[in-house]
Image 1: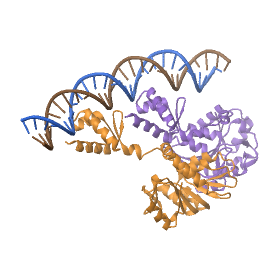
Image 2 (image 1 turned 135 degrees about the horizontal axis):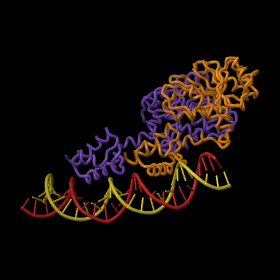
Image 3 (image 1 turned 90 degrees about the vertical axis):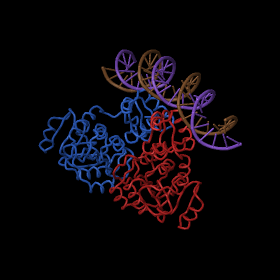
Image 4 (image 1 turned 90 degrees about the horizontal axis):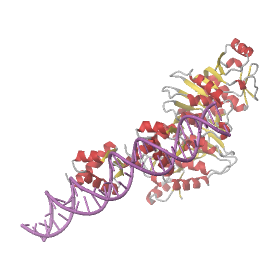
Length: 253
Length: 253
DNA sequence: TCATAATTAAGCAAATATGAGCAGGAATAA
DNA sequence: TTATTCCTGCTCATATTTGCTTAATTATGA
């Protein structure tokens, strides 16, 4: 077994196992632990695995599965910038909607205590945040609690939204591509997002560049339903052109 | 289990549990309490959790922690006793409703993690509390946020309730008299309470004796709509007799 | 308020993991 | 063949991790 082969094997093992210990690999590949450590060192430098004391962890489990709290930390400054730009679009007398998401939560945190502003939301965290702003009127859609991100989704949420009229919807997303539009992880959540989009006069997507080009499981809505996109630098020029051709206003912060 | 994995697991546990104790984590992850404390320390430094004596709290829930005024809730032990008695009435398969109030919040705190239990509520605090119980299905009515007690009230709430069917409603109250029945401070809140009562097969009032004989501003419903009353000793014998004559079961704890 | 119980951080020792250095051996090139 | 390079396994000093103990701190309840 050549070095390269062995390293490939390690990656394969990590794909199916999430994590392995050094002794485990040593036995399985029939080489010394020193060799395994050397291999792991190389793989780590190439960002193919995540190294930890005693073994290694599949990098996907470290990177692509960040908990909500972690997500909040990731790209925090970017999200905050995007959120502050979004807040500038809000006018007195508006009825805005904020769906559940880390960027929209950031908008809630940056919202001034405006009188005559109504915020519709399905996020428990945003409710808690807006409870601080005495003058803002908060309307909650209701629905079934999804604990993972503390949002209220499902038929109750959708039915309530049917009766409401929203001036501006600020919506976050897991993925945004030109072909598939907005996508998210959960089908029921996707439906609730769709219900919001349907009732909003203006749909404003807030998404840092890490979301652009990413595709998630459930389709929410096509590109055509978006009016504005607030993002940060890093989005490719050609995509900007294509989106603008569709009539979407791109705001980079 | 590697260090990083273990810390990730802690975050995951905190995801939907709101809080965990150190011994709990120690047992669940099969490491010493010292190790757990070290992990929690690291996670706290990275702002991923909120550390507290005896355990850790999901950072997102810190703001739900009872405020000082709440901690000074009157008749706390009485409320807790009443709540524990109320919980005994809940059966697997039930759909129960909890309206906003300190005694109903106490019920939520005492609820076991039952599978096949659905809780309908209009209280943001109860949502936060029930986020702990992984297996319980939580349905939120939606509505306008009333900051004073963090409840969701108004037409949206009422309309949602019309479509739901509730086995047992546990409702708190500000006042209860033989002549005027249940009364509360806010007219809109009264209407939402009324909507709940209307859709419940069984109406169970939880009220410590300080509420009995008290009259508040807004009428909710007459005595006739009550099926059971859980209260504590201190209620007058003659009133008990009168209520029993109306068919209300009185349970004193 | 004060006493008691619970929780914690810090220090220590044991177990384990690590990387650097070295030597042997296989592959490669001259 | 000989020299060179590369890979490997071994050793050992050093790092890290962990659980235990203890003193101090922090809750709790009477």
